[in-house]
Image 1 (cartoon, one colour):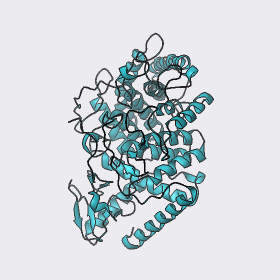
Image 2 (cartoon, helix red, strand yellow; image 1 turned 45 degrees about the vertical axis):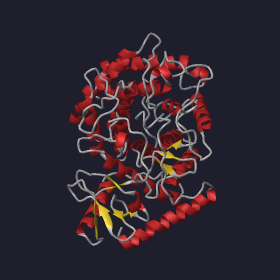
Image 3 (cartoon, rainbow, N blue to C red; image 1 turned 30 degrees about the vertical axis):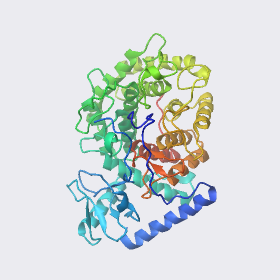
Image 4 (cartoon, helix red, strand yellow; image 1 turned 90 degrees about the vertical axis):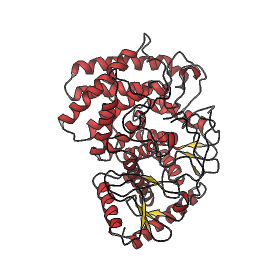
Length: 496
């Protein structure tokens, strides 16, 4: 993710009026009831360049689409969004005056038409059919029926937003605005997994193919890419965590998608380059070199600049284990053993360097905690009592009065603005670890802090209002994975 998205103290925070009440069990019930009534009413009436400094006032609370190739998403003006809502199971917008806004098939410009225009019904049918071609997770039997309906609506919107953010060539944008309009390999990896876990295999493979095409010969990726596949040249070094996340995504795609042998062969060179680079990068202690991670911060600004953060170590470990499992699955036992050996060395280093201090961001006594503690917990690593305790401590130390969390302690950005991907990571870990009630509480917070259109934003301000860009692809992916994990256990990279 971008330095101007995370860790930027000058970044502006923009809020939209959201029909979301304050927290509380009773008020959550009220909101859910209201949301269900709104959906019912709609069904009855409708049938169903760097750097960018912050986000300008009036930025959109969501995107509009049209259900047709190339699934173009166009931001909705804030004034047009007032009183508007999506037609059920679609990216077509019903405006307050009864007209409909959509992007016609094969174009990239939004238009406003009468509700009787045949393009409206065609676009809604197309979006409905795409959703029906896979699964829309809602948490399953672990979730009360009324809450499941709310979660399903959130999941539908998340899936449709991910499709609007993914270009035909597989470039998956972080969001639609400014410096968010780029493809980060780490964010894209989560998008691919979300598509794979919901049965949208074509989209998952398209994202992975894009990553394979833009990968350097030495296995690295640039920090981010333009949607045409060219690198964004802004002084950022390659970031090692992206290699681990893409390897994890490639393995999960193979595990859950009925791809052909040709499809796996297509990804294999990418896996080899990335895994060989990671295995070869480990030092005598078994650790990879210092690198930026999801904070997009220079290694020299960390508490221990000599060693990598947990935000790098966790994904690299998951990636090496995933690469080994991928290799085993296609009969390449030589590579599998090599990468598993590297994973074992790194795992031993984690036990020596991070475990004694309770898994802080940097491996020092009394080190600061951050969200990356979830990267060494399920579904990225097997459950461990010490890690479970560290996750709880990390959540406690980063919690805010608005119910959300900061990315980490002593956050350099706004100290009272919560970040939704971080909350979603804690929710995912809870769900994947079997802590269902904990996961539901965190999902409720995310559901309650969507925009007025039901879209997951990047941030939530001190007053509890959605802020910054919406949708954020990473949050959408994590919410989908959390709901899927409540329905059935997610695969965890094996420790052989």
